[in-house]
Length: 216
Ligand code: BG6
Ligand code: MG
Image 1 (cartoon, helix red, strand yellow):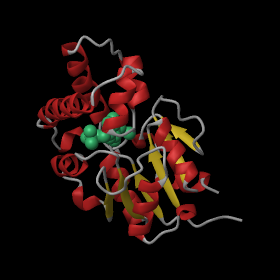
Image 2: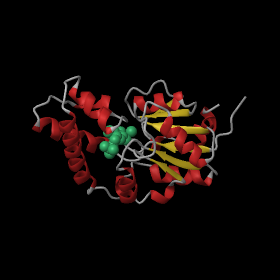
Image 3: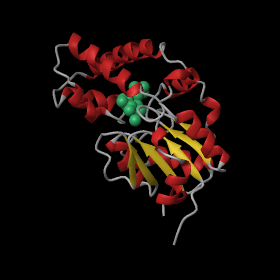
Image 4: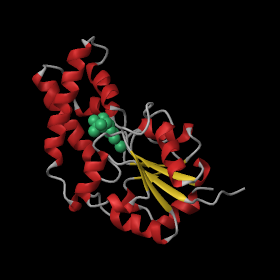
């Protein structure tokens, strides 16, 4: 039996734009200042997870006072927000605006499901806010990826059940969340995303038709 796909739901960081690099640079600045070893390889573990979980993973089990944790997360966010000033519509990843337009023309509903509390600002800077029918971000649900809650929240806002929606994600936690929620999934990039229904180096290397044909 085939399901008619009625919606595409996109992660933001690493799928729509390369803010994954800015998150890395901001955590790296904090780590360097606090004398914590933190490499690009370590950063792969932070993809897609909340700010708090990112800090936990950066600390690799090292204990931290709650007040210090809050202060460090605030500092990281200040560094990150400074980097966001660079973002212009040219920072959408190659082929993304065209893919969104093609999906809309095909009659699909479009949603965004980002763990980031900065998602609205990033979308504004990319001039892509109006490209989406529903936006779920770091304020929408309590349990972040790999819990399915955020994608389920977005699907609900779109009025489409999970098994009629495709999630595009660059993070292992994001594909885990999509599969746990009963969504179809497309893994984007080179992280641990092999368990998705299909993978691609970037959204720009896909066509709407190819994705729809694979989700059955
Ligand atoms: C996700 C990113 O989209 O948002 C993570 O992939 C990030 O790297 C998380 O930690 C939370 O973002 P923010 O902007 O709320 O700190
Ligand atoms: Mg991501």
